[in-house]
Length: 431
Image 1 (cartoon, one colour):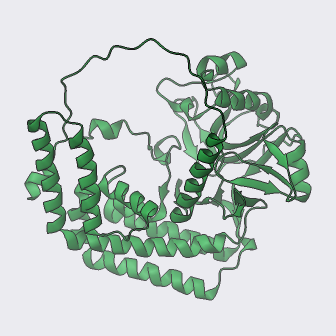
Image 2 (cartoon, helix red, strand yellow):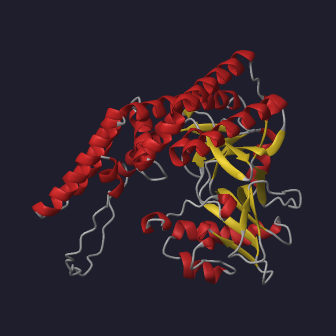
Image 3 (cartoon, helix red, strand yellow):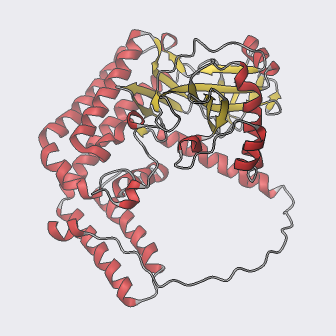
């Protein structure tokens, strides 16, 4: 039985539905064991071969740091043009056919509503007469800035700058979008994501700057030395998988899966720069439990959580070799991915990338393997860029006058005696 909290997650596999979450290439084994390892290897090899082939297709695309994600096109049932966020695929979808719909569905978030108003006005000028697509909103009419480098726009963390003919097109456009996904189905409810959108049927219009996410590897040099390094890391990952995999994946399964402790710990090490190891994982889980225990009021509840924590720590210590082997294998997959990312960063897709005044690399790339996308991202670098973004926001807020908020009536809080405790049936069985 799937735990209810997992069932509620929005990280749906695109091959089974809608595009909502993309996994890092090296993380598949953390989520899906031996099957995940094979997927990581297949994805990385496909990307390597694609770079060597010097091709330009949706098999390998560039990640654009646009915001928000927009779903748009013609409703397959009514034929009406619509725009939406990813809420188009919610159980209770928010579909916007008119400007009144936008105000009703998103009016409480003025910035988002403004983007959707512009999209509704302009995307119909380029969209095919049939079909549903997804892309990243890059700029609106008032989001561009002329500077010494060219013309720039900043949809999220990265500032993009265009020069020459491309800059002229952007200067004249009223909005910009990068299209990366197409949906197929006879209703919006049963649509399936396709990472290979057919953008040939889009028309050109001066009001809309539209760019496909395809990446042209003819612009990069994949050196023999880099290819050798890539193969060496894959071979080392394969060796760990072959020697330890059967027992290793079973041993670490209690902490595997999206959102589970291996996943959250790995993300933490990206931010801290720590080398993943079993002691670090134990410390990570300890902090999580300490936060939970601090919120509990009764000694009995605190005792139950402390017992759970002890079981976690004892289990990891008992299986530390398996956890450390997994971390070593993950490291080699990550290093192999890093070789590819460094090679791909040689070509920025015709746009310069900056965060503040600092020149940066693209956000990353996406490999579309067997109908599902996987991310190739320099996680440490993009984490650093997000830190710079937050720092800039803080500096900007320090220069603004504080807003005067109206007093609202105090709400009466109703206390509940219900407590949620996590079951650890597997941990008691294993220990």
